[in-house]
Every structure is written in C-alpha cells, then in structure tokens.
Length: 335
Image (tube, rainbow, N blue to C red; front, side, top):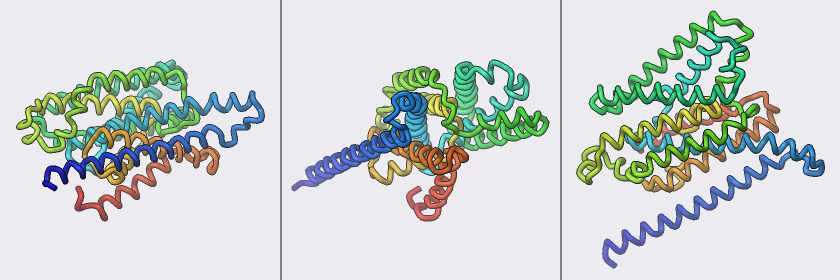
C-alpha cells in the first residue's frame, strides 16, 4: 500500500473516530439537558411543572448561546495567535463589560432605565462593547503592523486601566447601589431575561453569515502567516474580519450571561485533547458541546447542591484555574 493510501486511510479513520466522539458528546449533553429540565420539576403538578419549565428553558437557551459564542471566539483567537493557552479575555471584553455597568450605576443610579430595562441594557452592552472593542483593536491592528502579540499586550494594559477606573468608582459609590450592581458583574442564570434570546440568536446568525468564508480558512491560518499567504490567502484582511467576529461573539456571550473567566480556555483545550484534530469544523462543535455540558453541569450543582448561594462562574473559575495550571505545568511542551 502506498504512502498516499495509508495517509488517506488514517484521515478517514480519524474523521470517523471524531464523528463518533461528537455524537457521544451530543448524547451526554442531551442527557444533562433532560436532567436540568426535569429534576425536581414536579411533573405530577401540571401548573407547577409548566411554571418551572418556563423558568428553566430561557436559562438553558442562554447557556447554549454563551457556549457557542465563547467556544467559537476562543478557537478562532487561539488559531490566530497560534497559542492554546490564551483566550479572548485578553482583549479586555470582561473589563469593558464590568466598567460599562459600573459607570452606568455610578452616573445614572439603579433607578435609571439602563439598569431597570433588561432589553435596553443588553442592547447597550452589545453595541457599546462591539463598537468600542472593534474600533480599538481595528486601529491597533493597523498601528502595530498586524502584530497580534502587541494587541494582546495592549489589551492587558487596557483591562488594567478599565479595572482601575471601575475600582475608583466603586470606592465612592453608595453601598446599596454597589450591592445591586454586584449581581450583574458575575455570570448568573437565576434571573435570565427571555426576551433577549431572539436578539442574541440573531446576532450569532449574522456573525456566522459575515464570517462564512473566513471560517473555512481557519485550517490554513493555523499554518502561519507566510504559509497562508503562499496558499493565496489575503492574510491581513482575513485576520481583521476574524478578530471582528471574536469581539462580537464575546460581546454576545458577555451581554447574555455576564463574564465567565476560563470557560473558553477549558472548552477549547478539551476539544483539542479529545478530538486530536486540526479541523476547526470538528473543534468548534466539540468546544460548543463541552461548554454546554460545563454550564449545565455547573448550574445543576449551583441549583440543587448549593441552592443558588454560589454562582456558576465560581465553579468555572476554580476548574479553569486548576486546568490552566495543568496546561502550563504538564502540557507545556504542546504550547
């Protein structure tokens, strides 16, 4: 058998293996969904059962939206930077979100429509984060000569800047307003607004449509700038569009559920480790499914073990921190 035939056979086997693993992962996610929707839902009491499902279904959809957004954004960002232990959080999206919410309460108070109207707050979050981050990083991408590492460094500095200004506002803020603000600065699924779901889903479809061509080039982008250009890719234009998509995806996820540190790092690297492929079509699907499993599992723990006293973001942050150390200390040769 020739080398070409052997390589073709290996590719077919890898593809078949990954399809099986993705199907199994989908089944596990569906089981978690059933548990989440039905546990302690009292189906013997139709009115109560309907009420509980009415609360849990919007929360479930928001977790799915966040999982897809964060999984897609992280994998695209890691492929652009060619590093598996970085996340789009380095662009400062979480800091921008926290700063915007703190500034709104600091300037307008908790009685303003921007705080009370969840739909208006979501729209303002999404538009402001998308516009600010896009303008900043579009300019930086051009000013730094398309150097991604410089952009990451500047993003870290901007995160510190936004964090410092936010801390200054919190210090002089009324304690009662800070207590009300605190609930919006962490990912919490206990008070999900179902009316924002259609807006968020629509945004994801718009992002997918805008980047439909660039997403197909991700496998080539991972080869590096020179190789991609030699293969006919307009590298700089593609990278700018992909960064735009990363910013919008993170804006959708953060505006929908709030900041969730480390989730992207966890799901992207688990997808790579489980699937062991460079095909982004498989990796993105795997990361999205693992994100759903992580958020649904975390919500089950928060809801039925800790009785809503601990937010899901706490479990994700603890698990993400441990996993990050594992990647640095055990898998450092792979990065």
